[in-house]
Image (cartoon, rainbow, N blue to C red; front, side, top):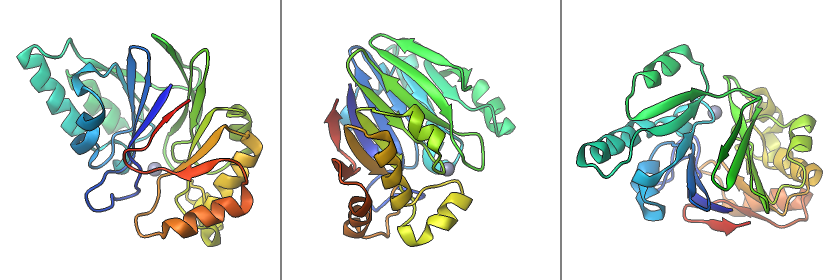
Length: 246
Ligand SMILES: [Zn+2]
């Protein structure tokens, strides 16, 4: 399985970069996981966008979905020119209701409602969902093949049950929206601090921890230092262009 980071910033992108957007690739399957501000500016650097098999939106905060509007128009162009095979599978929460209703009426996508028991099987790639702790319905996502696995926390407060669910994944792609000093605020807002994520990695014991959903104003050395003060395992910060094979 291949993880390609398209964008990793929240809640606004660093200059010349993008918010949440990740490609998960295995065999013939390419999944776009979240599609925040700026993702469409970079997506074509990493994949043939008209060949995407599916798109998953973890939740309807703008830094995770707003470039769906741009993607929709790119697909429309592909359908008109004959370069796109058909509408693309789109998995989204069914709330907020106005979002659910809006995307149902977009013909460039085949829309499916995310729910916790959902299990998807695409060629080479299996996908499961886990309800995150966030102010609106949000899904964490587990990807697995016969050989490797990846867990994406989406936006979520930490929970022992989530870390248990993600145990021993090869790649833990986890949000670290706040610094340690603001851990209390983070959990109140349905997010994690660097220390929350590092403690989660201790429980999960992943092959590698990739911290993402990073505030553009933070000093990367401080963010890394706070994670490494708690978690001694292999770890790194996400960046646009990062590619990891698991
Ligand atoms: Zn969010």
